[in-house]
Image 1 (cartoon, one colour):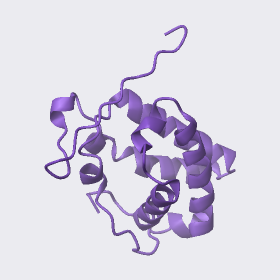
Image 2: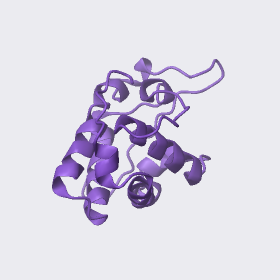
Image 3: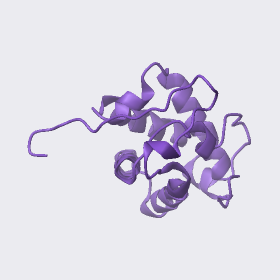
Length: 149
């Protein structure tokens, strides 16, 4: 799967779909509330995103093969995702795993799988992005200004 080694025992060790769903609920609460990250989800129902992420990660962790969406590089090819954005999102996932009391060893394995997608998602400039279809615009979201930045 997109060259990411499957972690066959992680899905079961975590407790299967109920744990992934709980973590993704907390995670997307954070993403949809964040002033910068939430803009990438405009017009996308949370239930769709959460379900896709749960099915995708379940499959990466050795669970059932129910994910039928695009692989990450193609699903995000139209988005200008910087290293800073990726790291911010990754840190929010880590915080969500802690908040859901995922044991340290399992949390680190989950984060390792997530981090493996960085090189496929991060782009150096908007010129590295292309629409998934001809009429799709490239999504570039400027970092919101915050006091002290």
